[in-house]
Length: 87
Image 1 (tube, rainbow, N blue to C red):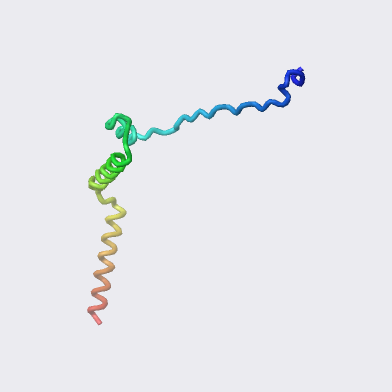
Image 2: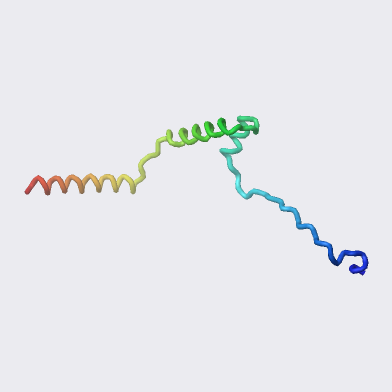
C-alpha cells in the first residue's frame, strides 16, 4: 500500500544532530559570567591575553629532575673550563 500513496519515492528527512559537550571549560564559563555572555572580539582577545599573563605570573618550583639537569650542566661547563685552562 506504500506504493499507492506515493511514499515509495519520498526521501526521509535526516535525524537532527544533538550535540552535548563532554568536557567543561571552566575558563570560558568564568569569562562568559564576567562579561554577561556577550563578548566582542576585542574584549575576548584582551581577556585571553590577561589569562595567559596570569598563568605565566605564577612561579613554578623547580622539580627534582630539572634541578638535577641544571647542576649537571653547571658541572660539565666547570669541567670544560678546567680542561681548557689546564692546557
